[in-house]
Image 1: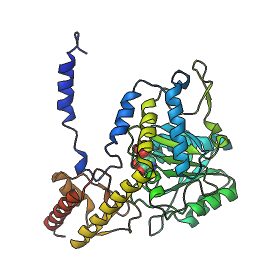
Image 2: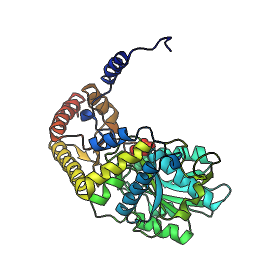
Image 3: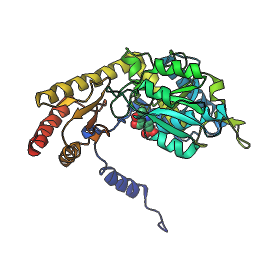
Length: 377
Ligand code: PLP
């Protein structure tokens, strides 16, 4: 550290220069994050110094968090749901598994997740000393129900289903998973980190708290909810289901805490409340329709150069089947496009977020065609 600090101007000049090294969103096809809505940014800045870890000191932002949870609960079919604004999908998944484990109190417990589960479930196995059993997928990249039934045993404390998988955007058969969880008297957690702010505005799926047996849902406002990073959401159907997360706090304004982190950003909750209130159902429906329009456009353009998706996309996530996906991806990266890959089968993974445009999709497909030709495909 310097003995004598720089002036504010000098610090800001350096920051501006270094910020310029970050890459621009309009070339990102690989991320489930996007530019936050400007009203979320304003709310974030207004509540920057608030700490939801000690809510008695900040009753204003604590009220906003409860209102945000209420709105998300209503969106997911349960206005009385309880929960909190977490740091993102990883924390929410960890906490849901922890709640299930603590509620059951079984030694050597396990959870059954789809093979497509986000890598946060590998962290869960490590952190919570839970065995994480992975069920294979069917040809449409949904979890295979027969496999789930075979993996569940008397030490299973939770089943996990995904509504919007990270790689294919697929939705697991949540009603069937819920029936199984009900018959065993165990938790069903739905990871809708991505799909939580997509599916309610698309329709066509029965996957949220309207399905009897869904105990908890991960839903990330910082993804398709257009809030700021870090704004995640974890909701439980009832206060009972969340009880396993309570820890006594001896020096704060509240006697119990359910969150994983202690000190936590009130600004994320305020931003989520602000953007949800501003967008309304109508605004989110238009945003999702825009992204689905981009998805259709990408499919049409890529079909013109002979490239097809691995599965018919359900939401704004597309896996494009190409030979030697790692080489194609490298070629695209050299041309400045950021795409990622699915694991099995290896394909180009493309997320159509609100920051993308049809014009950039056209440029991308032109470059994809060039890369494929250069590789002799
Ligand atoms: N769950 C799913 C389905 C995801 O797609 C992701 C991230 O993309 C996560 C969980 C983890 O979310 P985060 O990166 O906010 O921790």
